Length: 60
Image (cartoon, rainbow, N blue to C red):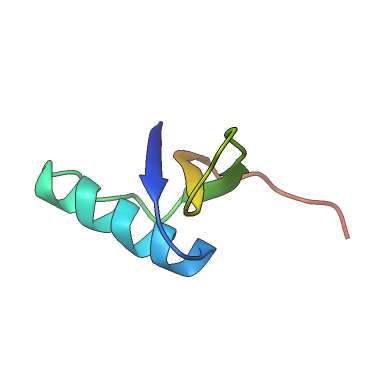
């Protein structure tokens, strides 16, 4: 898990992928990136919690 400062969810996702790439981590196609808003008191910019997990099958 990583807290990423970004203007929006798309920028947070790209920053997280760049961070993983710098660490030599390549994601398997079965992995999903989850991004959630983090609310902090006196927050100036956007903060996002980014993490990866196994993709889950969803019923139709």
